[in-house]
Length: 539
Image 1 (tube, rainbow, N blue to C red):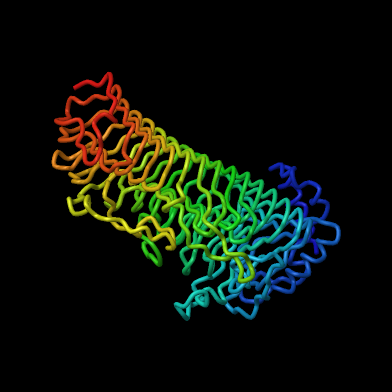
Image 2: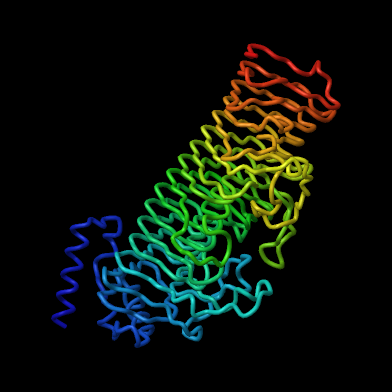
């Protein structure tokens, strides 16, 4: 008992020194799990002792303390007004026996209900809850084998480490999370979520996401590190709740799949999202379950199951590696978020700003893309101060490749393979602006830098690009009205500046471009030369 009193005193001093004032209302009482019988020896199952500490703490609120030790446990239900604090030197180990985890199906219906039933830390409709400290939670996820490739059965019996549903005032801070059997952490329809200074390493099993912010509102996340096999920073909408009012900044991310991803599930949609100051770098893990060693994409924005994606601002992103730097997709997979739900229609994708992005060491010749589907266009997207260095190597066959719509497919940036352009491919879009963009390739590429098809109101200002002399053109437009190109500069001698094709291609403005390295300004196919207005160009 004397030892436990000393621990309590030391912990109180720590709280005072480091100033965890935001949770001072919960710090009236401290409950060491060892007082309730936890052994902390790494072999004894401490589940019941931890549950007793949580239940006792929940009566009046307070902090459940994990002192230095190794705590083996099954599922723990977190209650309102309970703060979990894991001291440095303490590790919570998830049991490798699925029978130690209780099944929890939330009241809120979502796509996950059928197969995601187990979690190490679970909370539903709780308020003022937190998991903090300098310790570790390890799910021992490699112990859970995937026994079938059938969907969704392949997700069965693999517990999350954290799953909170419809909770308010949630705080996750300082801890290290590693080796989940499934997603590391999912916050479903939570409100007022604060995440700061956590470290995530997740390469133990399939579907090893870093974090899934799903249908939540009022979210602040900062100063985090993630290295995962599956998607890293992942925003979803697997229920009818929208993910909105989210600010994420100052993080370093590594993923074998997508570093920054919005979607795939999108039923409720996404609104008012700000993501800034992110470094995307190759994973430190040499083993790959999904994806590629240096990642699939740097930035993926996708809505394919209905829902709106609007008011998205992404800035100050440094991408090293990945197959594709930027991928935006409006599709129509149309998956219901539960069997009784209405069939979702095509979603809305609009009002997106991406700025100050530098991508180097791109690993494939695929290229970046912004694509909607016939009759449903991505609208009002601005990309500014973008610098991308591609590997090159595209062929004339690649340039002539026809790209299928695949409107009902999973939205993956690599699904088409090499695109007809090596920089950006645009199709079924409206009002897209590029400003101060630099596109290069390490070796020669025989594709245009941009190809735009069924693309209305395209503005390209301050493009600097390298184009092979044998390429059809630097820029190619097919059935795309309302084009303005200004302040272009070529790094290399170029045969043709702009190729204009299709009867719908009209209202072309070329002003103040440096065309000294261009042999021919334009080529026309089924386009009237009277549709072209030129002025202030240097030739």
